[in-house]
Length: 185
Image (cartoon, rainbow, N blue to C red; front, side, top):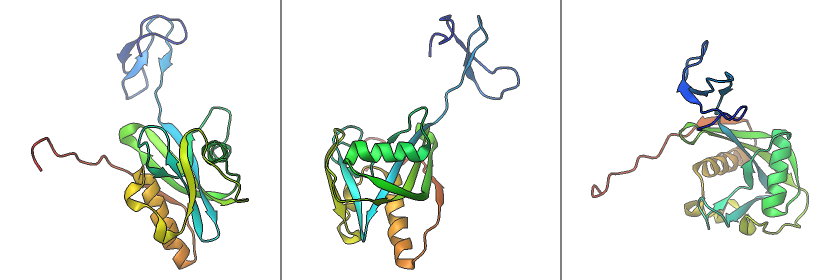
């Protein structure tokens, strides 16, 4: 951020009074510009013994499979955003059952909130951000082609809990995946 969104003056980085973090602060009007994590909301759409996945038509992870999810918009609840994203990405209508997984991803400033949901019918099709959408049984999940670790972990928990006959609400934090320096295989 270079300029104040309130008055247009150039901002500076400093710790405001009463705060403990460096923020963008406008020395002219005093506005403090907070930058907070982005909320990703979506669903784990279930139809009997199957779950609905979308193959991504956009980056990141173009061509990989994921649950229907995306950025929550201002003015909507988390559940409303998850329902909207499911409709946009899979043209699928769902009934939200309950929050299921909340995944903190601090190294990219995101929180992923996925709701357990029930498909209301089988009338679904790829939206503009999906190449295809498909129902998968547990044994058919393309585990090596999943786009995001939060999706893989959510699916793993879901199938395990389904076998156990009980469902909970889960929270976990993802850490960055270490990358080996070039030439150190």
